[in-house]
Amino acid sequence: MPSEVRMRNFGVGKNLDNLVIRKMAEHVSAARGNGTASENKIVSALQDLAGFMRSEYQIRDLEKVTQEQYAAYADNLRMELENGEKESSTTSSYISAINSVFEVYSSGNQISAKEYGIARGHHYDNVDKSASNEVYKTVLNELRERFVDTGDIRYQALAHSVRLEREGGLRFRESTQIKIERKDFSDNTVRLERGDGVKNGQPRTFTVRDISAFQHAQEFVREHADWFTRGSLIPSNMNYSQYRDFAYNILRSINESIGSTQGFHAFRHSFAHESYAAKWEEMTGHEVKCPVEVGKFGNSWREYAASETGLSKEEVRDMDKEIRLAVGEELGHHRIDITNAYLGGHHDR
Image 1 (cartoon, helix red, strand yellow):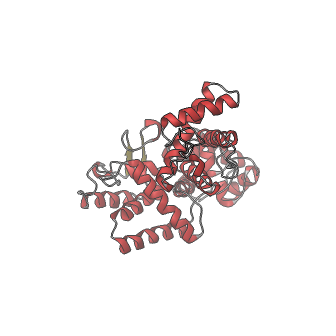
Image 2 (image 1 turned 90 degrees about the vertical axis):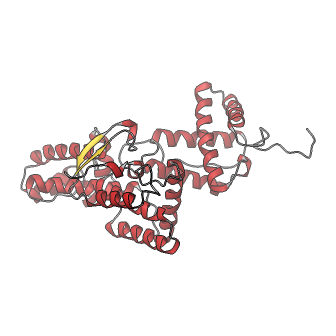
Image 3 (image 1 turned 90 degrees about the horizontal axis):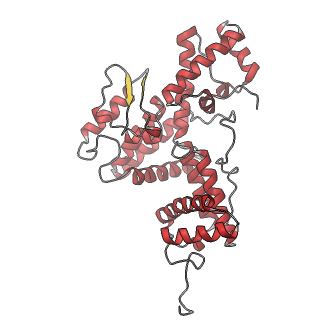
């Protein structure tokens, strides 16, 4: 090869395609004395990073990735984690694998998964991750104004998705992929099936106290059927990945304008808090807020709940478990330890 022609991607190849990624993974894994499993993890991580860099920065040369751009990738992983797009084991594994690539090739780029909230760890940390009603209204107003300014119907569709997350507890993927045009909401029941974006293909059925957000989204899709021929809130000329990237970029932009860092999952947290309190009121006649909302945990929270309801702390404990299970079923979870991530656990911080 003539000396003036410079190989890219640390001398491995011109474009960051699958062949180049595989060669880089083999080199890094061998340099670190690891085997095939490690190599495969690096391949997966680099494929994910490459997709992000191409989409966001039109970069196909890993040597050109700056620390700031790598940080933006880590922030995107955090958002995907919060929105249920990726598991914590995946996000932390990706950062670890990519860090090893940059280390072996001496690029100087390094990211702490813990710093970005994507490290492996406890299922919950007793931190309130919900979106306030003020933030919820602000996001909807921002989307409304952007539609008025541009006439881009995607802003209206995204506003409906945000309402489905906040009022119905849907994951971001579910709020966009639900085949809402053909659903029957006459009994205030939401039935999510395969094809509606449910996680791991697991359908679920639950009752919503106020079904209007689903009915309005349904009316919107039906009124603009030529834009949403699949019956979901994703425009017909986009696939899910393209629409997700559009939505994430919009939320990032709104966050910058209002000084926030939340992801779409924050609206799902708000739903969980409200559902939890409402179930206490239905069962006892008294509203009891979840631990992360009142900032009380363990015995101090049980004392608070007992004071609000007149129940004993033992009765509070039993009812809390029953209500957590019910909220978990609405969210599509079947274990209390996962529901704790939304409501707060039983230990003090």
